[in-house]
Length: 345
Ligand SMILES: [Zn+2]
Ligand SMILES: [Zn+2]
Image 1 (cartoon, rainbow, N blue to C red):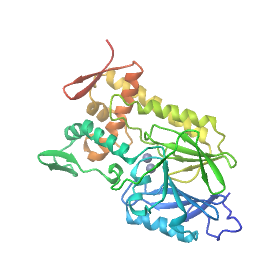
Image 2: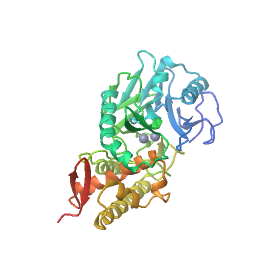
Image 3: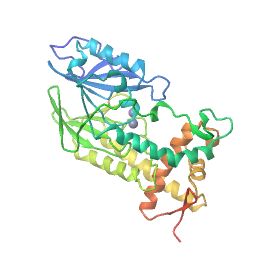
């Protein structure tokens, strides 16, 4: 699986290396994500004699730019031949565009423009800033006051692109030609509104972005009561069963096999979480902070968590609450500017 093709330079192709050929002329490049718990992003380079396709590009950070430059160099390529495909809008996948974009570069993604992403972020902030303020403790770092209004200084994960290059919109059923391959585009919203996977049938390979990771449960966030991200995610997980997949190429962690089992595990995880959140509402926890605080997390003592982690956990809790509301299991009312959740009478 990891043998270099005859006409390419030879590298140390093991998963510990910087570049690994995972299927013929498709290379996994390990891009560092400094100061981020994910540690690395996998960019996939798909090459033939004329073209280079790079799937996902890393943060807006010099280390990410240097990694892509080094990989191009090692593969004997230049930026003129490059097209970019983005699996989704998150800045560990897109932020580096601010650094690597060249005039005329083709960028394919399931979004019409980066403005869509920024619009959503502005709306999210309106809902979540008041919650973050309530959940903050006086000693919390990252909470600043701008014109008397408290704001959470967000990590790079949530920062929009400074520049917004134009994008070629790709959608379900389209194919992306990359090297010798034709990748089928599969829309997989849930982890992100604009998430896609890329399936290559001849080698039964799925470039899966953050949709399914082997060791991490991808974050599912809802920011509004009208956005049922978890239902979208569950449907997108179901779609994976339609494809015969031997090799999964994730955006974080090593390539893996056994997609069906991992999909089942993730479904099960969310079903258990839905039961738990329902129980918390039944026990009398009515607001997002109280429900998040009392839910089971990997790390105990929610009240002492850093503010940004609370922020993500509340968005995850909200995703489960919205699912239960849409399913008719709990009801939601709005009290002032706060959501309140209870069992139907
Ligand atoms: Zn992501
Ligand atoms: Zn990611």
